[in-house]
Amino acid sequence: MTSADLYRTVRLIRRFEERAIEFVRSGEIVGGIHPYVGQEAIATGVCAALTDADVITSTHRGHGHVLARGVNPARLFAELMGRESGLNKGRGGSMHAADFDLGILGANAIVGAAGSIATGAAWALRQRGRDSVAVTFFGDGAMNEGMLLEAFNLAALWRVPVIFVCENNGYATTMPVASAVAGSITGRARAFGIPAFTVDGQDPEKVLAATSSAVARARSGKGPTFLECITYRFDAHHTFEHRARLDYRSADELSTGRSRDPVQIQGARLTALDRAAVDAEIEALLDTAAGIALGSAHPDPAEALKYLYASPEVLR
Image 1 (cartoon, helix red, strand yellow):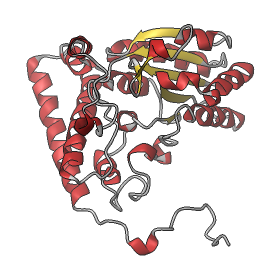
Image 2 (spheres, one colour; image 1 turned 90 degrees about the vertical axis):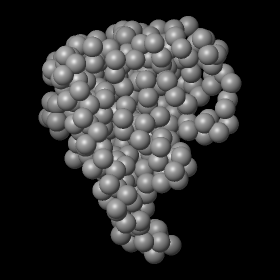
Image 3 (cartoon, helix red, strand yellow; image 1 turned 30 degrees about the horizontal axis):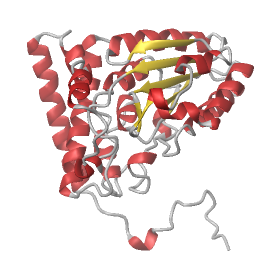
């Protein structure tokens, strides 16, 4: 993975999210989104360390994860807009994006729930003889959820090849970490005997290096690793804040948090000419993707109950 490849991904995620916010404001995306702006280095570095055989689970703030995993941005835009050409035919929306062909087992709106899904998936794949690793992303707010702690326990006991990635952006919605988490975040994982490391979550190359080590450990049969990636959410927890104007972060804090921008950090590793070429490539890609999504049909209301059940039989 070259510096240009990493920059391409962080730039893609940033510009996708900025355009998605514009579509929320125009009404093309109904209900809003949880922007990933500022946290792009984590998805980029983690997914760059994975192979096609690996799987991930995501969160309510999951666009960056699925884009870094290789999802077609046209299909993701279409999903956010509720169109038939979306990843899940417009039925899943922003918080439930999935693509099993790419190893994306789904975003999950339930805080901390995806950790248990990834742990189970990693164990099942290993039982089938596959050399696969699972990664689960979650925020600092998930550290107090029992489902996640149960996943830690099982993963440690059975040496499950799963990597727990905590995107610590400092807030669970508006609740500061210091007001919600007793002890330390890495200490929670270490209590289960899981090696835990704190990583600079604003630098894609540092995230890639840490994840590569964790992946190698998991593939060798040594079990799970926990990565706490320190990051900062540049935008709102949810686009609803653009109207509500919640006042929980000071101007000084926002300025300091935004001073280490993953796009700028990675972009500085390229020449100005190479960076401009990638920027132009991403704009063209997203122009095309947005056009495809906007031109796609909405689902037929008569099929509102379609795809709800695994069985085609009607439940009575």
